[in-house]
Structure formats: structure tokens, C-alpha cells
Length: 335
Image 1 (tube, rainbow, N blue to C red):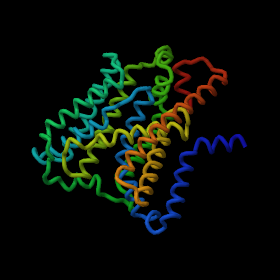
Image 2: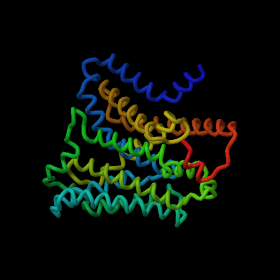
Image 3: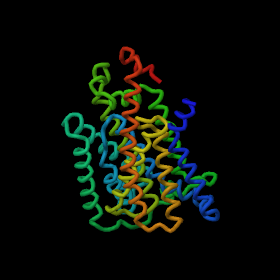
Image 4: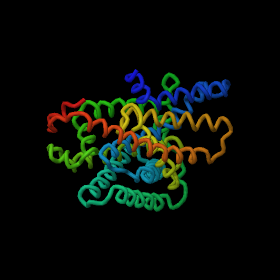
């Protein structure tokens, strides 16, 4: 019975998602349980899923990245501008945008670790600078022109009816799951997030891994910006901030499921899925335009509370368990 209760508790978010799907399908049998709704959910929330995974990577090291929404504004405008105004080949544009995302992530990490600026302040400052640059780059207007067809396929491709962005999210999720669960780098981030001093004493190079986490976040955010560019096909500085809140909700709410008490890859994906299903159902039932930000805001407050409760519960459980000597070899062998 105890194992069953623990299983249900760990998978509560997934079970709630399935319950919501069942309820909406019962209430709206002709519109909700359809392939069109599934494709819409997968396509619309793929960008949020990428950003939630980016944020999760940083939160694992007990840091926060508030620049992701502003980076979307800058990088998607940059992508459109390079293709429309400078007529650069779209593969080169993708490489440039990813490199800029990597550089912004590295700047965030350096400010946090070497300048000793709190991650909230550092990433908010960098993000605000990025937003200002995007306004200058676009001139406060939309960048409109012919976008190469090959680039548009990044968003428009369907494989067996499943949008390509959703498949790319699944691929990234698989890679990140392997990294965080089976490779030393992922485990080191968890150790750093739990107790930075302990990580230092075990020989983990904290600065390297924290900066690396910000760089990974920057690259993932840059790829999400490319998806935004392929979807809306125009560059405008106002796009991006709307993604920040759902990304935080996904990462924090994900820490309450699968492995409650810490952010984790599959929990993040499930959290984004329940947000997508919940909002889609409410909108199909006639919800107004303000439903989505209202839903995300309420969910964020609940997610923070639940994440804190799950973390305290995990800490109490760890205190009740005899601890072996902490070494870097023990961290590498930990499951």
C-alpha cells in the first residue's frame, strides 16, 4: 500500500493530465479528442517545452535565468533580419543565432560566478539589454520579407501527423534525461544545487558547471527562438516576454512530479503538457483571451508552493537515511 501511495504521489501530475483529457473529452467529444487538437497542443507548446527545459537546467544548479523571454525577442528578430535584409543562407543564420545564444548564456554565467551578481539580477539585466538591442535592431517595427522555405519547414513539417518541433522536444528530453540521470555532469549540477559548499569539497568545479548550465540554457533558448521565427515569419521586439512565465511554471511544477523535490526532465515535460491541456480545454469551452496568463500565474504560485513542500519532504527523508561519506566517486556512482 505504501509503495502504491508513493507511486501515485510521484505521478500525480501525469494522472491529473490524463484526468483532464478524459473530462474535456467527455464535455467536448466532437472537438477536444481529435487529431487537430493534439497537433495544436503539441505545436503551440513545443516552444514552451524547450524554454522550460532550458530553465530547468539552470534551476538544477540553484540558479535562475530571467533572460530567456528577452532572448527570444532578440534572437528571433536577428534570424528574420539576417535572412530578409542580408539574404544569408538559413543554415548559416541558424548557426549564428545558436552561437549568439551560447555567448549570452556564457555572459550570464560569468556575471553570476565571477562578478558574484545574484542570478535574478544578472539575468534580468542581460535580458533587458537584449530587449533594448532587439528594439534598436528592429527600429520598433516589424521585419517583414520572404523567409526561405527550407527554414519554414522547421515549424511546418509533420511526421506521421506529429509536428517536427514536438519530436525535437522529445529528442532533447531523451538526451537531457541521460545527462541528468546517468552522466556525471548532470549529477554534479544536482549536487551544486543542493549544497554548493559540499560540491566544492568533493572536488566539483562549481564555476565550470554553473557557467555550462547557463550556456546550455542559452543554446536551447536560441533554438526556441528559431522555432518562433519559423512560425510567425516576422521579426518584432515585442515577442518573447510571454514565454518567460510558462517556462518557469513548467520547470518548477515539474519538480513536484516523477522525482518530487528536485527539478527533473520528464517532470518538466509533463508539467508543460498539463498546462497545454488545461489551457486548450478552457479555451475550447469559451474562455476569454486573458485565461492563459491568468491560468499560468495561478499555476506558478501553486507550483512554487508545491515545489517548496516537495523539497522539504525530500530533505526530511534524506535526514532520516544514514549518509555514506560524500566523495566525487560516490557522486559518479549515484543513480
